[in-house]
Image (tube, rainbow over all chains, first blue to last red; front, top):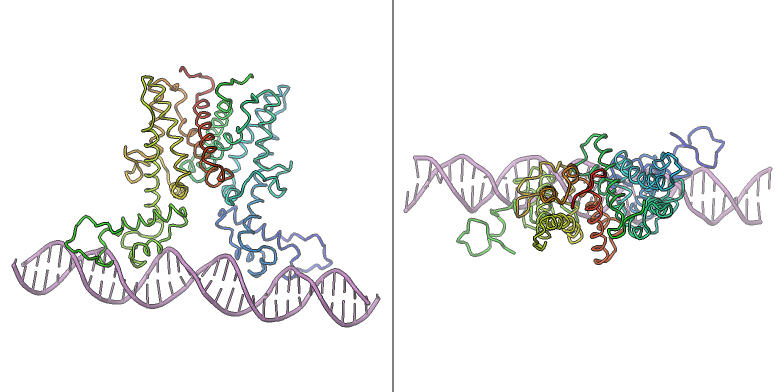
Length: 227
Length: 227
DNA sequence: TGTACATCAGTGAACGCGCGTTCACTGATGTAC
DNA sequence: TGTACATCAGTGAACGCGCGTTCACTGATGTAC
């Protein structure tokens, strides 16, 4: 509740709010909680300062404006998504069949993605609220434990499938966009759209079918994949 | 610019704004234009009344609050999307191969959907901004020329494929969700996401690949489709 | 056909709200001597 | 080790904005007699 900053002062009693210590990080954290509950719209500069116990204008020492704060929160949400994907991938059982492992790790990107969207819809919406190119998305602030952004995790999984001969090299270019579209669309329909009311079991079943559809359909038409 | 209402008055000069005639429709129309430019957030009640040339509170004669106006605009956006899909389907060349026609009409749902999203991103976002179940989406205000909502057009296209033996009956249940997810996700990535900067040719190519992926992948794994 | 009247779609003014942002300031901190 | 001082992260008050919404009202319209 009261995390000490790096310079561990010899001061036992709370120093009120003056000279906060790490206000920037605290504001991003407060914004992250706001985003978790209410999505990007809920990331209100004044409310973030209120929660940290600081006057509204103090935020301007660390962010040029509200958009800069939101961008920082967005990066944090992307990092949380990346961790969720990594966790899902970590659950893939090892096997001697290298191709099968690569395929399962690829499917885990999709299931982890959708499951994060369902568990943290506010963060998910926030992660995609700042319209920036995700091509240069390898900023460490947007990455998970392996230092990869969600997009890079997807690309790596596809590359591994090619390496393991579970996907024809001819099918690889652009495949990340197809897979991403499918999974992203399902996530949106589940959290904001007509499927937002379905129970977990149904959502899981649809997700499973979807990632299998992608797996089947991603192979280029004229080049059947060697299994 | 000055469309006469149904009761064609014998009054040649504009009657200013008093007794508007069809203020409800005019407000929805103004809201529609606002949504077209700026999405659901831009549907501001005061701005709509301003454009119609009426005092802000006049809107409350026809809508209980802003949310009601937005819902009406949302329905209109859904109807516009339905028309776009119908137009795309109308472009499918006739053929003796009934299965091929059914498949092409199915693919046209996807291409029409994505192309509408690209051409009218504000309306597209607005169409999905009001979180309501789309299962009961056959309200005429949300339908296109054939009286079907976008979701119903998709379902009908899939049903036709089954009828024409272009899709195995076992693959039909739930297929609409898989197809919709893929196409919806691509639309979102193209208008709000990392693909918003790509040129038309690239967008069309990715769209084409995506709908083909869906077409290939939608067949249930254990039941290969007879084609 | 003419008149009295109820209806109700509009007006004009005002409200409270919370926002983002700016201003001049204050006082604890760390450094140079 | 002690002191003067520059730095700069915070304060407190205020701004203008545009929003959604409510109030008491007004006056054109259509209807009953």
